[in-house]
Structure formats: structure tokens, C-alpha cells
Image 1 (spheres, rainbow, N blue to C red):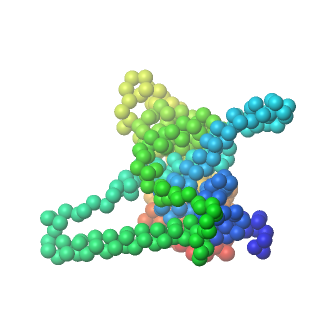
Image 2: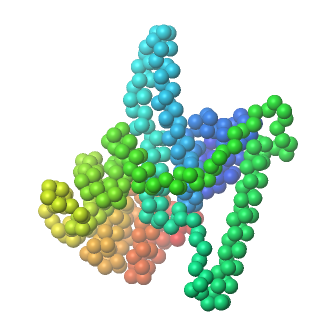
Image 3: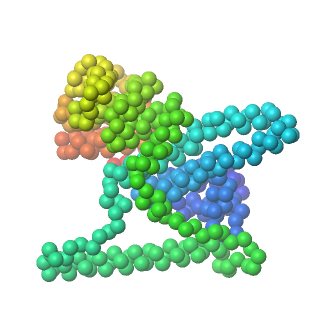
Length: 401
């Protein structure tokens, strides 16, 4: 039913999850009022759910610039909310709409803690951390050093370079043509005189956002979340991930303490605690900082060495059939990383009973499979067994392998 806005919005959402961004835009365009690019109308209408879904779609396809562009659009909406509130102060007092006025004030107090803003900030931080960990992504392709190549290698390298340049030019022409069509609203005839023309986006691919310092941008958003979303576990997970890369052990330790207070059995907390404990001896810290890090790390581990702590976690997971699948996967991974168990033995924590625990969905099953495959040949039989188990549990899921 193409007249039903709700059904088509849901269809758009699922299309984005399936990586069909072009089809999703065509579907949601049925309900946009625009004379040009429908995405301009969606931005003007502050359609955050669509922009967040599109950003996640781009991130899954490793189109980092476009993902950042859409996440930044949602952040811009909240900046506008914050600025627009000043227009209501004098109006509400003059019209004596005090009940609505107090509701607005309460909303603004928690503005940066809203779900949409958190999702946008989290996505932005994740992308920037990935760019920090993989700096080659943002580097422009450099011309290879032909002087160190043989004649055959030089000929082959130049042929590859020419092919890449041709593909880049072809792609640029295609984007230019699509942009021209979108400005005309996807119509064959151009807009008539007097029609409103959509503004042209100067940086549709988010190239300028990719040029920013990744850790500084991640730090900025992490600080906002720490101040306005202190009760979310994800806030402190992000704070830890940013701080450990910035080599700030005290901030990372603070994040661990906050995570323990919120959910001490979380897989995210357990993974980062072991990571911090293994890195603690290599921190460039002296004096009081070193003392605090050493004492608090020992306290978080219950006075045990890291290896004993991890082995105890493995025992508890095997004894408790209700242990969540994400936690089982995390424990199996850290058992192998700390060399406390062989990959084949650690894999049994996931395969034996993991499908019957808590937190089992297709995403957690995929993450568990990724960990099993990372174990290598020693856990290949466990990975095959896990694929068969998941296919039996979720028969409608395709291509789980």
C-alpha cells in the first residue's frame, strides 16, 4: 500500500538495514514535498531516524565520509533545537502558556541525552576511532616509486594506475549526472521558472569531515556524552575506547569504574577490564598516577592476576547455562588473547549451550561466529558446528556463514 505512510516508513527502515539506500530514498520520497533533491526536504524536516539509518548503512559499506555527513546532520538538528529554544521564552511568558513552557525547559535540560543524539554521537565516535586505527583510509593514494621496480613491474603498476584514474573519472561523471537529476527532482523536465530549486550540497561525500583529527573529534563527542548521558553504559564504553587511545589511563580507569557500577557482568566491561589490566604495566605513568592505576586495577580484578581472573570467568560461564551469548563470546576471546586456553577449548564456551543463553539474536550470533573464525584452524570445527546450530535456530536467515 503506497498510500500508507507508516508501512512505507517501515519499509524504508528495513531497506536501509539491508544496504539498499537508493531504493530507500525512492520509497520515502513518496511522502516528501520537494521540488528538487528529496534529501534536502528530509534534512529540513529533521527526519533523524532516516538519517541515522542511512549513516549506519554507509558505515556498513565502509563509506566513512558519507556516514559522518549523515551523523553530523542529526547533530546539527540538536544544535538547532538548542538555539531555537530562545525564541519561545518571551512568547510563552507573554501568552501565559507556562505548562508548555516548563515542558520545553525540561526537554532542553536533557537535550544532549536524547536517544537520537546519543546514537549520532556514538556513530561519529566509532567512525573516527576506526579512522584513527586505520590511518591509511584517509591518505590520498600516492604515486608508487617506479625507480625501484623492474621494467615488467613498472609497466604493470602504470597500467593499474591508469585503470584507477579512469574508474575515478567515470565515477565522478556518474555522481555529477545523478546530482543534476536529483536537483530536477528526478523528473525528465527541468524545473520551470519561479520553481524552488534545491541548494547544491558542497561536500556530499563528507571529504572535509574525513580531514579532521580523528581523536580530537572523538574526544569532543565523548566529553558531551559523559556529561549528559552518565547513566548509559555505552557512554563509558566510548569514553574508555577514546581515553585508552589517547594514552590517558586515569580517564580510562574512571570509565571502567563507571561501567562496573552500571553493569559489572556486561561483556563490554569485562573485555575492557582485561584490556586495561594487560596494558597497565606499559603505561607511561609515575608517582601518584602509577600508584592509583596499580591499586585500582588490582581491586577491579579482585586481587587476582589477569590470567586467574579470566580462567575463573570461563569456569563461571560453563557452569551457568543462562550466561548471555555476548558475555560467552567475550570470555572466549579474552581466554585466547591472554593465552589462558587453547582456541579449540575456549570455543566450547560459545558452542556448548551458547544458543540457549540470554541475549541471543542474529547479530550476537554473527559476532560470535566472527570470533570463532578469528581463532583459526584450531576452532574450524567449532565454527562449522555454530553455523549449523544458528541455522537451525533461525531458519529464515540467509547466508549465515
